[in-house]
Length: 339
Picture (cartoon, rainbow, N blue to C red):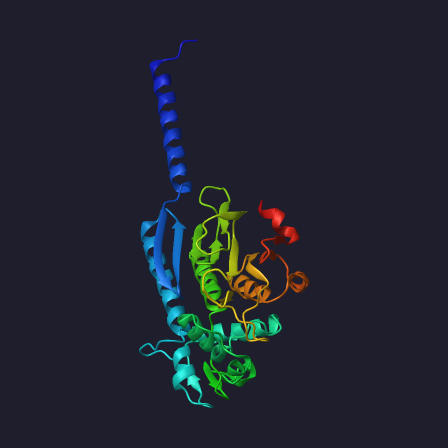
């Protein structure tokens, strides 16, 4: 039976309509990339989000910048800011036994630091500020190392000398100084990831120095997160992690350090010895929560391999890569899931 002209026209219109529908579906599935770059918390931060809603993306990235800036200012132990009682104020201005009113965000960050201390058996200690200040001075001068006696006399590092009261008040009972460098970047990055997810933006990539957090992939694939060889000035990638909805955080000795008398002294200080440990060049933790990954990467960097392998058995959904000072790489069992 011969098709009429009307039938051909109808068939053509149907194909055109199907094509338009497919283009619309493709457009909505293929989200546009939006990016912002910033420098907070002593590191360059890049945030990429994927959505076709330009207005929503612009507002989201502005809020992301505000979040990182807020945590940068609150945790800053070297500079004061107007109308903010931050860590600098608490360390340098507040009197012993003075109750200091702080922002809720700082209150909860410090509470997380207290929890991290218990979780890591004291290896992550936000009360180590007096000792870290001394090491910071030696590192800036790149000349000599402090003596054990000098470090012990620096001031209190007893976290029990820090008290959090109700109504966002905090108090020190001795000359304690706080340093939140071991927890703030991971904590703030997790806050940003949660904000984006709650906003309905589940496709994102955050790179905050050694802290990476990703959501769903923008092309129904998996993100490829390269781990850089932990050597100064090296751009070689020794391992690629393939995953979505994950955090990959590295603590290492290869960026902030100085050399004296043929030995490297880096910025990660063991609260038990008051000196930098010498087990690894880097430790990478892979787990969904960036704040937890940040804490665990620091704690594991301070442990020998056997102790670290035993330690992570008490955590679910946590995998680790240890890159030791003999250039041997050790993997936890679950790393195969990221091949």
